Length: 74
Image (cartoon, rainbow, N blue to C red; front, side, top):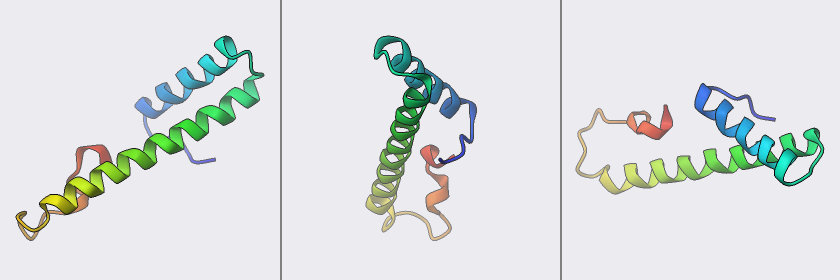
């Protein structure tokens, strides 16, 4: 399981787990496992979006710009 690194991810995880537990009727451990999967997928989508945006602008960007400047990467 990946570590939750900030308050936004913690909120995302807790919300997904609560939805699975209360609306889905899943036991808490199952709801948390599914919430972790959703968080991992969300991280992947954010990373792909950031990389694509960087690649589209890399040719015109200054030499010192790096992918770490993408807002979603922080």
